[in-house]
Amino acid sequence: MSQQSNTISTLNDLIKISKDGEYGFRASAEHAKAPELRNLFARRADECAAAAQQLQLQVTHLGGEPDTGGSATGALHRGWVAVKSALSTYTDQALLEECERGEDAAKDRYDEALKEALPADIKSLVELQRQGVQRNHDQIKALRNQLQAAH
Image 1 (cartoon, rainbow, N blue to C red):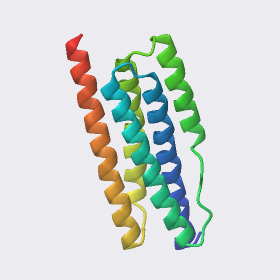
Image 2: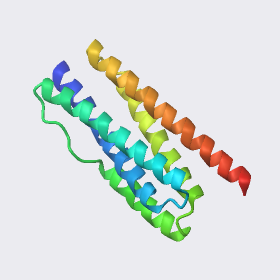
Image 3: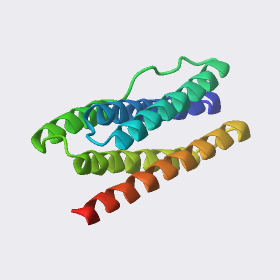
């Protein structure tokens, strides 16, 4: 596999994880009880969509075909969000726990991508997006802990 096709493949993997995040956060926003959580989840969904769009532009710039959907694992994750939320009567705590799990998966995938030999400009973009995933994770985790302590 050429370096360029490897880069395209890596970016397409990140597009999938970003789309998974977008879908997961949108589903969580629909089910969250607290208005501030609904707003937070909606903002995070928009950020994930913007990240995917940036990556898709890079793939196109490299002459590749950008991925437009999420992954099979993400589909399971989204289904699990709906099932777990329904089973737990859509508690905000359950949504935060699932969003944290999703962000853990995203962090892992970004970390794997950063081990690849990517062109410098693309590596910078991936590092910047990885930092955003970390901020999302940390905020979701803090909110989860706060909600947990309140109960």
